[in-house]
Length: 110
Image 1 (tube, helix red, strand yellow):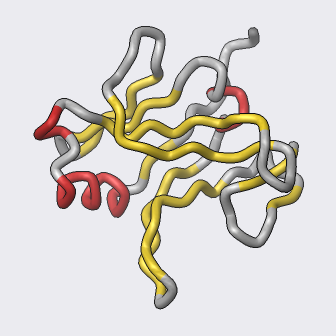
Image 2 (cartoon, helix red, strand yellow):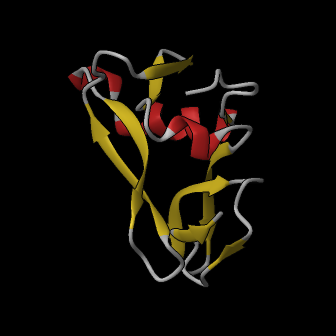
């Protein structure tokens, strides 16, 4: 595996949301992973989870966002954000590596 050139970054808005939901209070972090599947080939899995060995840990505002080693190449130079819209609110990934994405925003191809 080649060394990652530009790790993913997390916006202040995403860290603020983690503060609001109290993720760190329970020893949890926001886990962002990439899995095979979805309508475009890959999909994001976003959930609260405990950090594990070999995770990349991104810290901010006393909170953590973690990415496993297998997902890291897919998330190089990506931005992890939190978005509030009329249809709902959610964590979103802005991924410059994705060549296409489906309408739901959770599935993509490279």
